[in-house]
Image (cartoon, rainbow, N blue to C red; front, side, top):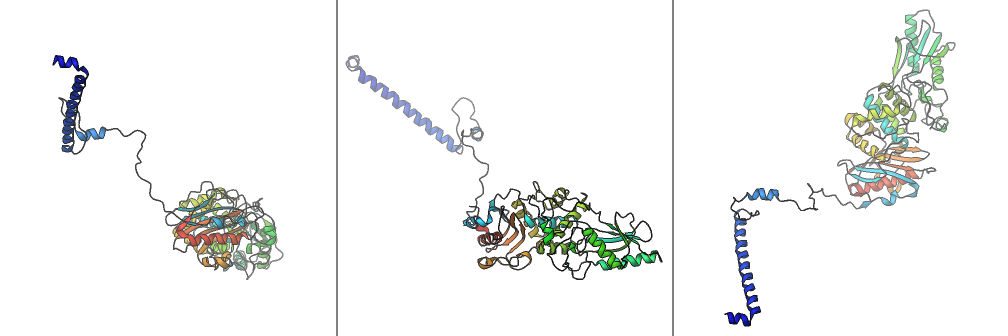
Length: 476
């Protein structure tokens, strides 16, 4: 062996190393087999090294095993999102719309189907009247009535006509306001009550009290006086007759520069006492001689929204402010209206409320807020059904009666919404009963200096496109 090793040392060295490798490999195989048997017996968990100590609980070993670094595992997978394929990008890009702001919701699920700067506050036009109507429902209630009273003055012979914010008080029998209270009734009853209490003492003085809010706070600096002279809007005073219209039988009729004085003149005429002295002041007595009331707020809202009556909107907003404890000033509407709307559970953060009619171009309401409030209005809770039932219907009623024509006629009767128009915007916001049965709520604002009335038709086309898409509406 020694001679053989001497002659072939490398051969024997490699043979010996090979034998060692085989032996080591065989031991590893048997060790692996035993480990595999142990893992199988324990249900598949890792097995500790063989030592003289007791084998640890394999479940505990699993729990202690660290997660793979750099691979966080989400607690829950996100829900699948429906792929929607119906785009209204074409109608939304119509140049007649100038700068479009818009928002569309699935009213049932709350999903946002379409948004173009929908969260950004912007001018609303008369769509703002929906907020005023909702605030009036919240604070006043559907059955509340506005009162105009005559109370005793400082002594016999003096009476005070006290305005309570009712612009529908009528001096004629041909008012645009159905069922309006009559000034003649108020005058007759007041005269009879005074004469019964002070027989033989004639009425010689009439005091006009329009202090339900500050009578000087009657016109916003952002409103154009042409609204008054053309006949869309009166000055906002707590005492007036017939919405201060020159022709009470016409919705659009020039208004005066002194609604309080016009009401006083009409009252003296109704009294049949042309020689009395007329002054302005505040009532000091609470002794009521006569009182008349408006139709309920539900009826006033119906007329206001269908015809977009600016005077009703502004006076209702001021009454809401008074009844909410804010005093009735124009500036208080920034607090009073959002405060009233908070009752409906839609956040009012960021709303800029300059007036109650939407005439001001510094009002700021996101289209998203209109769409979200419209969900509540459509549901009808908290008496908001009054607002919903008063909205114009496409091709059927109110300011939408003559719209949605031609190719857009497919959506006639399917869009329930408030229209808006000022010199720098055309707007529409409300509810769409879509072709696929989905209820959508929406607001579209077409905004720009020099915008033309052709924007109305462009908004109708955009709204009809959303109607056709329904829940398949894509935000692309």
